[in-house]
Image (cartoon, rainbow, N blue to C red; front, side, top):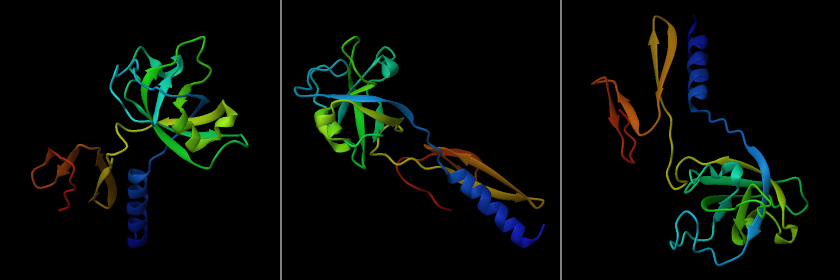
Length: 175
């Protein structure tokens, strides 16, 4: 294999390792107004205003509590070209729940005009907490002119010197 093909193969593997593919689910969103406390998940704890109540579609017997979702309005003249990340803090029970998410009015206002009252949305679950950075470490090695890639997702990174996985705590080790 020529040098050009090796470089192309390595670049292709690196792109494959570093690409994140996200597919959004579709649903609907409504909004509710303060007071936002108490809530089903956190009782009297204030979680700010970028919050939402989950319908049965994602509630899963309180498993949704604390999950973060990126929500984007779709297909309406009321939509704004923005998305918002909300934390699930409450339950929106049937039959009164008219959407997949019942967003706080402040969160709804980021993605759509509140005059709409109900909008179509696309949403994806965010990894853990949006304040954290999630990286994919790629270790590309050559073995007899064949490129292979191994990868480790945080909080682990592989050390070639010791052939162990080392836990990384909010730092990037480059050797």
